[in-house]
Image (cartoon, rainbow, N blue to C red; front, side, top):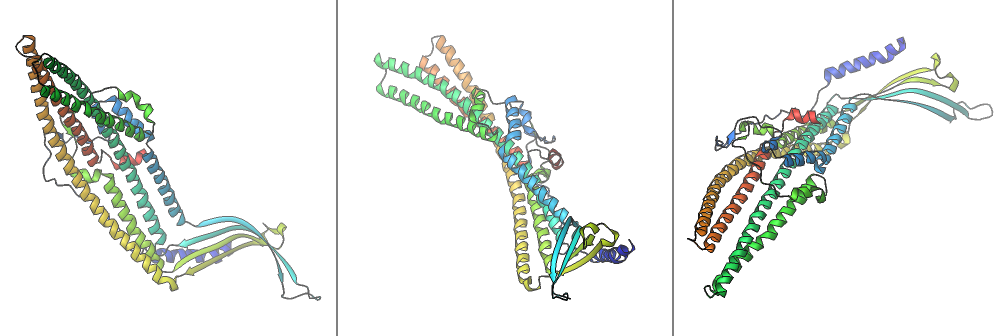
Length: 477
């Protein structure tokens, strides 16, 4: 034991001490970017928004069980989420490798060697046959004097955190797409119902005009106009049916299912009611809530660490190897005290003849870091743009909905009065049918506006980061 202390432990301790004293990580140290507060050009309308905390499951405010069930299924089975989850497992495995690279590598093994030697031949000139048996532990350790392994570990850590943010962003996109196509499907269903009612109205109108023509009280022009209007209404049905079906097919992909599994959704259901004030939290915190901003910042940190890892290759690399075990000339002697053996073998390597190549890779890493910085700044500006745009779009769509709702209400009143006059014999049936067509047209316009308003709600919550919070995202993984 004293020999080991003298020839192994003491030199090793001195070497480790010198490493600790001299060791440093070359390259630039990363300064984390702090998410800036967002200053909007226009403040959100207090009539439409509240400062209540933005919930991660924002879609549940619609109180639509079918929508809730669809989103739950998508979060459990969506293939994009599964792909990103696999990327996260991969990134974490790389991180584990980088962290383990900083520790000594110890392997157990044995060897048997036979060799013929020309040295000191026997009296007859025969060569000596030497046999050697070896068993023990081999160790290899890179002394990270200049921080190459540290920078690689920092880069892997930042990349794993970036993929965690990507997973949260994928979750937001999946939820938003499910809600978006659900509302598109419901809107198309309502428009189909209005169009079919309008077609029935047109059939009645054509019949009445045909009767007037047959009785000599109408003209061919009136009949042609009535038939043209009916054909126009009928022509809207295929497009609406296509929109409904395409939304259903897209929902099936988002849920990881075949369209046949979603047939219950084909039953007509009204759009859910919007609450008076949407809870959006503090808009100034939007950049802290968006995982795409967090991902871009983490990739910037990784690019910064990559510069340090390449820079460290400009300096000598010191490895410490060692052996502790038994060496004997006969296999039966292995394990005896006399067969104990140990060795310490430091080695130094330096790419002196390839420094130009290393410096080229250093410039490459610096260029990538510059690109990552530009991408981060672009993502921040895009986040502000999308937030401002979503707030404006929803506010304006609500103004349109209010106006069209008033128009639909007045059209309904006019249709009711026309029916009363017709029942009293004070108006022709064509007048009542015309009032009904006006009502149906107003209802169709209102449905289109309401659907657009729902899509703007989805876009707004997507722009706000969908209620994603880093702590919750980490714990869910």
